[in-house]
Image 1: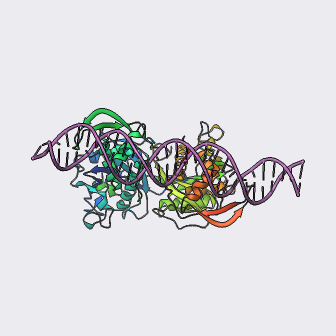
Image 2 (image 1 turned 45 degrees about the vertical axis):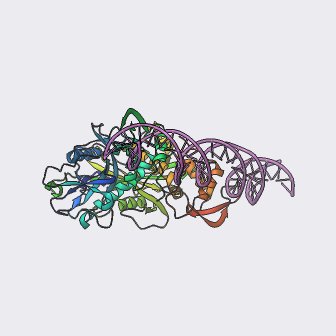
Image 3 (image 1 turned 60 degrees about the vertical axis):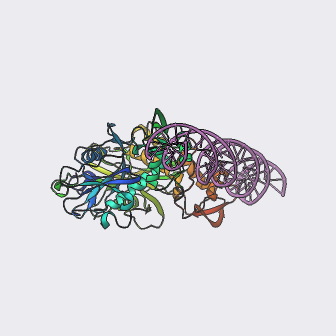
Amino acid sequence: MIGAMSRYDPSAFPPFAVTVDLVVLTVRDHSLCALLVRRGEPPFQGYWALPGGFVRPDEGLAEAASRELAEETGLRAHSAPGHEAVGPGAAGAHLEQLATYGHPQRDPRMRVVSVAYLVLAPDLPTPRAGGDASSARWAPVGELLGDNPVDGVPLAFDHGLILADGVERARSKIEYSSLATAFCPTEFTVGELRRVYEAVWGVVLDPRNFHRKVTGTPGFLLPSGGTTTRQGGRPAQLFTAGGATVLNPPMLRPES
Amino acid sequence: MIGAMSRYDPSAFPPFAVTVDLVVLTVRDHSLCALLVRRGEPPFQGYWALPGGFVRPDEGLAEAASRELAEETGLRAHSAPGHEAVGPGAAGAHLEQLATYGHPQRDPRMRVVSVAYLVLAPDLPTPRAGGDASSARWAPVGELLGDNPVDGVPLAFDHGLILADGVERARSKIEYSSLATAFCPTEFTVGELRRVYEAVWGVVLDPRNFHRKVTGTPGFLLPSGGTTTRQGGRPAQLFTAGGATVLNPPMLRPES
DNA sequence: GTGCTTATCGTCAGAGAGACGACTATGATC
DNA sequence: GATCATAGTCGTCTCTCTGACGATAAGCAC
């Protein structure tokens, strides 16, 4: 308890390793995908895992997550309005803390507490692996969260659980926030935004009602003036994300 | 990065201390209150702080939070449906992970990463302090979150920030879940539940619309059969919390 | 041109929320 | 005991939003 002298006795506190793990999500080809890296050494050698690594002694948690993200993908992240924020980067992805996992046996080697971060990014070129020989890939979360993940092999450690929590967070958060725009490039159409919702929720939405809803919510979308036909069909108006972060009333996920 | 051999080299990982801090909220006398303990030793000696303490080498994070809660208040907690759950206790409070705070200088002595937990409890007898000479109290969060917390002195460490995050979590979570019942005793009336919402949100709600809403949401409330007049006026029906955990459609917080 | 695709505007019925009137059943007070 | 104050509970009305779906617009492929 806090009153005990031992709280700040350096010789008394049990040593922990602290890592960050990243749930990096994007929408590729109509489905929600997560970034995985292949482990090059035991334990779980050859397994797919979430990217992540140690927190350094002199850096904050979000800072560590941001650094790992840059190392793995070259992305710079905008921290969510919150604590330990990193300055907004150039091609920004959304980054927010997800949860912390510290089951005593979650790592067979030592006591590791991992702070998971959620990253939402627009579609990226195929990921570049880290400096070593391990490889990286985008995997559709639909397959990952099923009974048998990649090729029937579950993710390393408790990363399947972390991924599931991250996906659930993303699914619920786009309901009442404008976060879905984090999956889109700077300029996007209403149809592209709708496909993001459809991919993340795994549903089909009515284009007309969706259009009415998003264009009728003040501050959600800002017309950028241009149009595009990159999706085929009639030219669509281009928008950028408006300043609104919270959607009231929310986008309603169709009854599960 | 994950592929580096050093990830699991015990001599390479930087040592961290890991603690849990508790944001324990209850509704007392029409206002939302948080549990504070007074620090008996430096740093921040004499300051009010959130209860908390070290995570032991062999216990999980939620387990540590649950243990600290029991030590400080005698409460047993129901973990939220999730990970590292603790078995449901007798007089249960709701417990869920809030967020993790790890700014390098948040503790002047050493690098401490603290996993904060949010506890929602029914009104309790005046808290019993821990084993040492420090004292404990309930403080209305309205005062704590203002410009000058208790007697013009801010909370120790970054606990003011953690508290604010916990309060915000509670405020938003009772919108779309049945969590407000965690502030009520086992049996409660619709009016008592309404006063919980009013205290947490700091608003006044229409009793008739509130009654219609909560009694009309399937699974939210279960009639227990009895009635009570403990609030004065006409006898009110007693309810217990129903099985529903998610409210759809949500309770709407009046426009801020 | 025809056909196909996507975007965008409109209409209508139903559900839910906010405002508020009316009535009921207790305890407190004169 | 009559009256009043306090809560609780039921109903009504209007407005907004949603979901279902018809209709039109404006590109591209052939």
